[in-house]
Image (tube, helix red, strand yellow):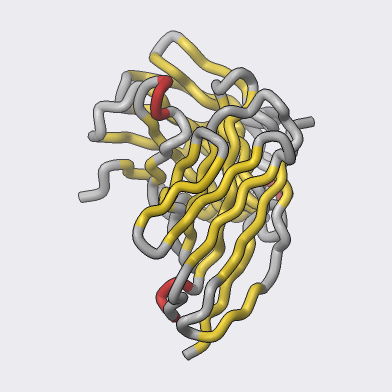
Length: 111
Length: 114
């Protein structure tokens, strides 16, 4: 059974702080990794993708990947109340044919 | 208008009834997916289709069937609904192999089975 694990939270940070979200996965063959954001009552939307070891930055978001440790993380700098949402880690499995999601981490940013 | 449209958005039904959830897309994507979301369990893949002639089971396909009527249409059926199929169902699409993890979701169909 391929698994993607995330702490469910809630993770609470003050406005302007760095939020750190973590994810581990079980399939060593996974090649592609994604972070989706889901606001309450809405559908998930893709915010970051990462395919190779190291860091990838996009605005206030940084995704980090360590395939040897089977670990993916998302850093949100200068957190804003509008970042309050559930963040879903997703990983490709089955030779890249399917995408498996973690249960999500709920982030709350207080002003 | 939404690029990925699901109907119905909300449905309440009784145990044993046949239910169909429909999904249509205007993104021109070949790949389509059905997921269900339950509180505390996250998103789980039910079925996926890479083209009209290609249908694949996901993590939790038991009790469900699908039909890919055209490139733009992918339907999910519950032949005999049961209460533990109460969930929020999402249809999603993606482009080709190089972008298959970049999913575009519909707005969801909330199904309640009494």
